Image 1 (cartoon, rainbow, N blue to C red):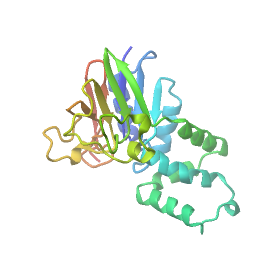
Image 2: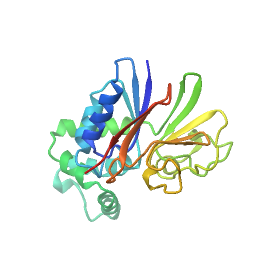
Image 3: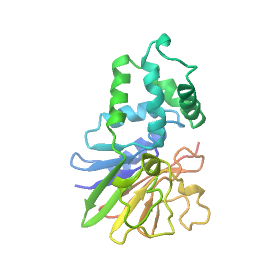
Length: 236
């Protein structure tokens, strides 16, 4: 029985299948996906539907799921039921489109109404962080970080924005006995880090978003039991 973690697939379905093939996920294994399955890449909904049909996969929500959920419900309504001149509706749609929501919308609108509703309910049920104990070690999984961190501030006290938008300070050890596992910030863009482009482990941080959607980036996963890393490169 093993525990794996992945993040920020961003619709890169082929890379996701590549990682699954490398892992060889067994029925008694668990894979945690820490948000941002959606947007940017070509097959976000196809990827999410695959995840929804895998009983040993637990999906957390990232900022892209929260941007999407504010807009996807509009797509299940009749045209006359949506006021596109409402400032909040317009701003939500614009923010989502500016952040790569078009590919999600393209796939979503071709689905049956029942499948659309299933996806919406699945996203709404996703947690935003998870505490784990694996092999005697403690982990906190969260999409972005623990914004405005202080030693006495636990994830339960963080705002949604702090959990899904604000990246951690990797130069500061937050906990002595807990590893903070995060996505959201592509390591391939951390040019000052010796392990840029790979999973970064420092100060009890484990940063696993390696830029799957970025040309030359990769999708990454890690086994929390033994630290083994898995990569699928984006050459396109």
